[in-house]
Length: 100
Image (cartoon, rainbow, N blue to C red):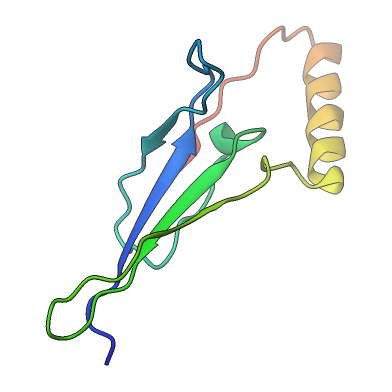
């Protein structure tokens, strides 16, 4: 019988080590069942580690899954390009935004 299965989330860092391996940093999530990507995650991969744990505490093998790099939906990308063009047309040369 399944107990408290462990789920860990990791985000790919920009640098790879010199041996060509992948680097991921652990994400702090409130609910291990979900992770909501942010704008900063675009073009990065997410790795999920899942370790089943029975009710008696016996741990099973850890499974790993690495997602393809996250992409911005084409419609959203076009909307961002339009907004930036409008800002530039009004003399702005940067955009400051706060993202949750």
